[in-house]
Length: 248
View 1 (cartoon, rainbow, N blue to C red):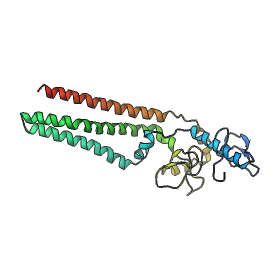
View 2 (view 1 turned 60 degrees about the horizontal axis):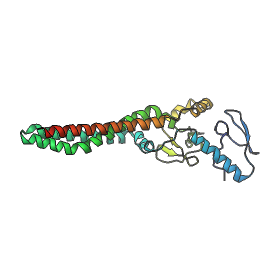
View 3 (view 1 turned 60 degrees about the vertical axis):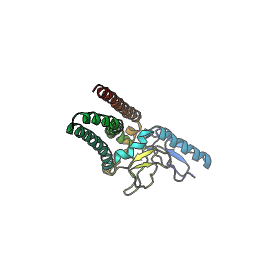
View 4 (view 1 turned 90 degrees about the horizontal axis):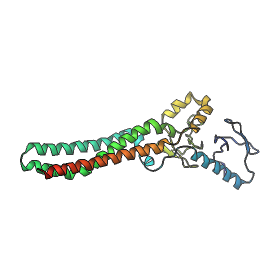
């Protein structure tokens, strides 16, 4: 029942290899422990420690869980955002050209057309700006906290950043742990970075275990605030255009 579950230290949540007599000695904090002899109780204790490890790290929730895969695919992200900006410029250019190429009533017709297009185009532009700000924040503050642990051996599976369990081999870079449900980023640079750091894994693990978990919530607030401001500005410009149109 517990054969595949990662065993963690009850004190520092570091990975521990149990002995044949179910005794444990953490290589990170030297805590001595012992697992229950009953198989059911042992499984429950191991799962309780795994759940505690998951709570100790930042978790991707809400909108961050949705947009994080998009932020990791650079070509897809810039294609999506670039299409939004391009569509906005195209619509504005068409309206300006239509208004300037004719006079009289054509100007009023051009402004009337712009008012109809401004709300959807303004919303698309607001989303693109919010995503750009969100990706900048993600790359600076969040991404490093999502990196998975290096494989135990060359060619092995990446390990969960929370519980240290082996991650499933899938095509996506953002992988959900089968044991604790934590998302870890299996980025190519992990192997390159970890080759020179394997001997100092203990120090690295302690440093990452004490990382702050507030970056995710601050990133969400910043992106939502940016989106709200852009939407408000959209409607302000729309009402100003309506006023200008009515005064002509």
